[in-house]
Length: 300
Image (cartoon, rainbow, N blue to C red):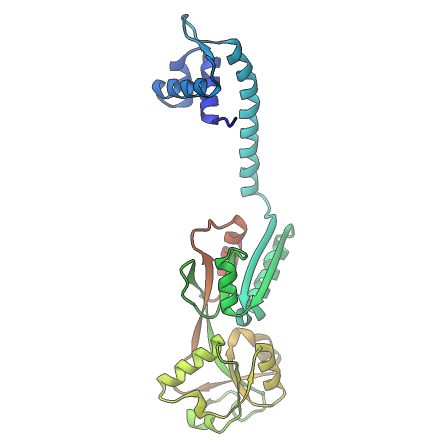
């Protein structure tokens, strides 16, 4: 038989104060509300719990037995609430299930999660890397709490919000003739161009920018299409061509001098990295803590 702790609290207050009015004052409610709770409890247990015939209200034998048990139950409820409150204020514990598409998952999200876990050593972090559509499906199915993707795909059961913005740049080997220069689209036409495979977020951004500039990707010498961002970087470092890529993905190579940036007149490519959440799912304390942590470190 399930017990309503509000009814038990009202009953115990009456027993302890021997008065409905004083119990109501203690609980901060009206006397009729206390009377209603006690009557509902008596109906629930099928017995009279209080003797109301005298000047004082006292428990019957059944009421006394219930009172002793109710004290233990209410004490346990208080203890549980204190435990929950302590968890909300204490160290983060548990597991964060997060997913990312191959672009943001290769660098930015990985490093953020590593630092976040290091600051919260009692926390386990699990990062799944898939294409954008798969990440959206996993978040929609609540197998992942959060997703970070390079393109917002419409779906009823998930919501998208801007997480950060990432510049898309043209990179080349450091001794390439384009290194450090601003070049025209005509100059780029004759250069071997390495691109991510169709459907990749960076490629979609560049295709849109080229269309806006009055040209198309197929007008260029795209002689390599590679599925992984790391593969594209490796090919450029090795001197097989130039590529458009997220700046965040090549920060370490730029700092080390393994790659150089070039500008293209008329192209100002920026892609929006989106956060995916399941609609109607209450965020966990761990997820909220990670997002606060990440937004303090990501470019505005």
